[in-house]
Image 1 (cartoon, rainbow, N blue to C red):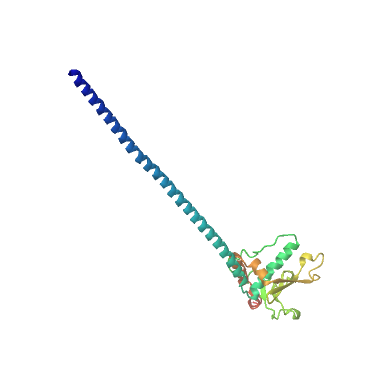
Image 2: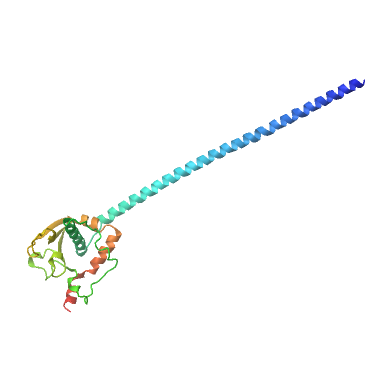
Length: 241
């Protein structure tokens, strides 16, 4: 009877232990799988979103950057082209550009480089001082109708230093061209000033403007220089006083 009870207790204990072990295994299995799968799914989802956002952002930035850059470049080029093609200058200012052109021709003939901003120090208007001993040798502007002009030169305007003919620039505007007349001292050789003939060059207004009046800095300097040059009446008033 005692042995039978022991067997029953032992069997019950064994069954109980088996049930407990089975339950723990099932619980562990039930707990691990959803957590791991959920985390993995979350990482994949996060990575996918991150990749998508990053690519869209990069694509958007690249496109915008390209558009803005190209647009700005195109706009600047167009403005530059339009600003020079639509420029209308008076004869005096064109004469200043023609003088720059003449100076560059002489520089090139002497093996020197030209300068497309020759009045860079004219950041403001600088009217000549009549009390300055060099006043009479400053440039002044003579219209082609001037009484100072020789009869055969009445077709030309002139930037002159009133005596130094080698520095003078005679010019006339004819439609879209400007004809420049000056003494070509760079090729004078052993000739005296009196023996050196005048030479003529014709250049388009568009070339002068695109070369010497294209940038904002050039325009400021040229305008200030042109305003600094006295007209004939102003010059005569001071030179005779």
